[in-house]
Length: 213
Length: 213
DNA sequence: AGTGTTATGGTTCGATCGCACCATAAACTG
DNA sequence: CAGTTTATGGTGCGATCGAACCATAACACT
Image (tube, rainbow over all chains, first blue to last red; front, side, top):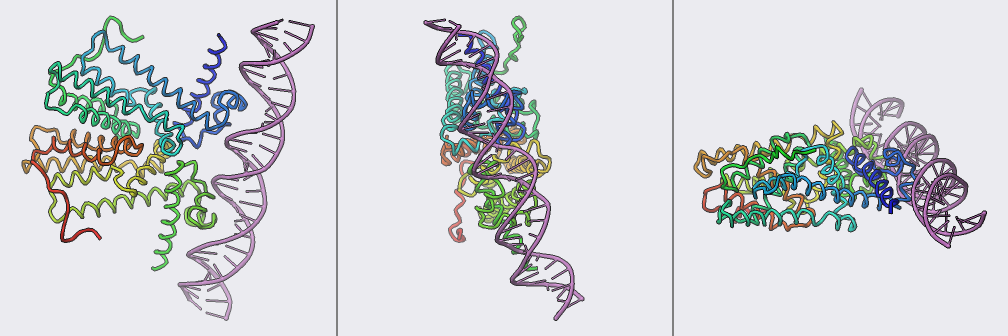
């Protein structure tokens, strides 16, 4: 059904307008009129595709989440055919940093929604699971590193994984606030990884043959 | 001047209403009418004490900041007469965690303001310096610990301090979102401190004689 | 050809927004 | 005591809010 494509594209176009406005002035700038103007559609269309404003905010967040997961998978797949455990952990943590405009905008939108996550049950369910999943993913990778001798056996994989994720989230805030450069954040992550991994060094994930488009 | 007291008390009363509303529904719920109702004063009074809404948001944030610093000093002073370096670092990091309703509310208000910090220059200046100051404070304490043999010499004090602060901030988010309990966050901080400090253990900061009121 | 469905624009309504304006009682100043 | 300043309440105005409502092209199916 080719209409479905148009339908989703329209929703995406509107959702992107929501993101842009939210990153600029927070959710209070996300009014139906402003979104309509930003997306260059009529206000009526917002009602048509999302209904009420509440559903618009919810829908825009769901699309953002889908994007985040898809792009993360793409970037991780881009690490090469057989990336080392450390490179994967590094890539996962980097998804939490605003290293490009896409991720910067995304994390900014999340913070704009943050307070709502606590009160609005519909929004809460959407964004509740992601961080825990990341911790478990990293913890699993560290255990895998322990089995292959890249990570010391006496290291508490779960605790270190959780703190690495927490640290990356904290770095996210400081980079967003421009209290620290993205390069500094990267260096700090690598500094911690150098502590957790005993492998002397890891080649940077540059794949010369199949480079990024 | 005894009027000054009344004046500041009125401003505080209004600011607290701003905080409560911001923690519930974000800044978009902080309307002049709602604040007036929450503070149980007339809307006219908000104009009188703060002027425009912009100044109200700014003023409420400044009062919050003053509170945060004062309470932090109080809690640190409560550690006892000669607290160990590790206990001080622990106390500083705990200021970043929502360990009680006061800190929980405060950090929630900060996240409600977050996006504004990036665009509003007046707000930016207010909240820009605090995190850097914390990092430097912790870094200085770690160096002090190195000099007294409590912290290994080969440890990068600045890098570890920054990552400890970042980790605490990340834990803050997860505790606010109830993805983790405050006790777990405390345990994770202590786990990291056990790594940074070589001192075998630290007595808990309970002062039996001069206990808290 | 007719008839529903989809996708769009425009308009309007009641509520609420921030804020300017007016009034006034109490307190301080001379 | 007269006058200014401080501290408060009330009210109204223009703008904007979210959302309901009405119209109608374009296409699908029969």
